[in-house]
Image (cartoon, rainbow, N blue to C red):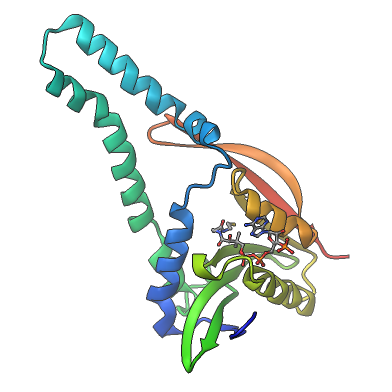
Length: 220
Ligand SMILES: CC(C)(COP(=O)(O)OP(=O)(O)OC[C@H]1O[C@@H](n2cnc3c(N)ncnc32)[C@H](O)[C@@H]1OP(=O)(O)O)[C@@H](O)C(=O)NCCC(=O)NCCS
């Protein structure tokens, strides 16, 4: 990277908060390539909004302000549930797990990319590996700070993870991600990951469907 020095090292206890925030902000980013795709993802929500507005407007004679509040209730619920999901999701626990003695959820490895520039150290990326069985590992928590994207940080982290798989004689590395994470799909494809299956995940009481892709890397 130009002008600064980046190195990959293992996660330390003092890094949890920074890493957690970085992963959460990566998860929060809009992932769809186009506005249309984003709207399609939220089609059920839009349907409810307009449906509700139409029904309420048709059967009652309530004033416009109440109608507006009712119409936007589903949108409000959508964002509140998203906020709760991301903040109370098991991320903090997972991060702590990598130093706990609990073998079930523990990551086998958790690395961070750290940039040193002008005497400062800053964590700018992360990646983790979870053991699935003797020959199979799962890649998790790939995230790079927005300011440091497209500089090869994710490639550096991925290279580290794949080197570890080689050292451990793992035969396969799997991962799953939203089909809309086009940049990440490019990145993994360049490293030899191939799509294995696409599946739907539902949230918001079954109203929102998100397609996910499982990719895998078979070590030759
Ligand atoms: C996906 C992500 C990890 C890539 O990080 P990065 O450090 O920018 O990636 P790199 O610089 O190592 O780029 C590696 C390759 O990824 C692809 N890529 C990354 N950013 C891209 C962009 N803006 N446009 C097109 N391709 C891109 C390219 O193939 C690139 O190789 P190239 O630069 O030689 O063309 C980063 O964008 C991110 O953190 N996104 C949010 C969280 C996320 O999606 N995580 C993955 C979920 S599993």
